[in-house]
Image 1 (cartoon, rainbow, N blue to C red):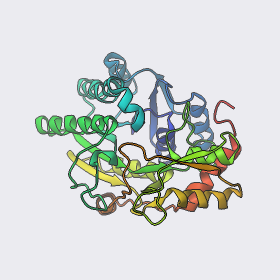
Image 2: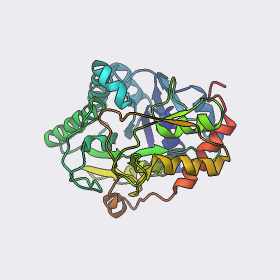
Image 3: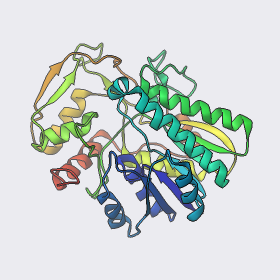
Image 4: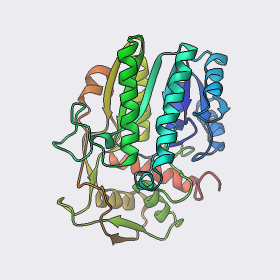
Length: 336
């Protein structure tokens, strides 16, 4: 099949493209490079021996989207393009709703016009909000605490309403937990433009000397070491989850799956593991809790195992080792 991947040059998208190409699919990438690098396209080709097609553009351009879908005869869409920083979303709500909600709406309209009705959506565990119980399963009440999470939930609602109106669609909503790590080759990994918002790339940059220190936001949570605990999942496992979901899009339906490991690690767990892998000290200081952060959350991913035959396989050590390999091989990131 020919698969359209929006945001395919980004961190998660590039790993999904690698998995798709290695499984024999053809890949078309749409990206505007607002938080990614054109260099990634060549690196995907170096890993797989196959170069994805690049259609540079914006997901808010319906005419462009329809043209790409029809020109390349795409059979399905994996939609990752969007803004994703929780803290930033509070200060730029209009940008987040414009890109994440309106952009997704434009994409679905273009798909409808091109009669392409297989769609995998990159959602987030943030839609669950403060846990009423743990681990989160897909039936947990939805009450996102931030603009980013609300923007993702709005798209999920649009999909549910569209499916109710036209049951010919085949939807898979994938709720990510905390993707980390890099491809084992060290050719692709997480290198956001500007200051990273996620823990692992900051730790890697501190270990590599690119940044002076890490700030730990709160060490007074009701956890064993006082720091927040999260369900980290290797990005390669996450990518394989998309391939598994794609294989189950043949039948119409609306399905929701958590993609996580089901085990939480604290900030200090990650720091100490990375120190062991890199043999470098991680300098840090302690800052106040960030608004909206919670003590811990982690996934019940049994539905993905039962229905997709997928489960996360790589442990925290592999996550840190692969991220450190990417940092060593790309000390200044892609631009270096």
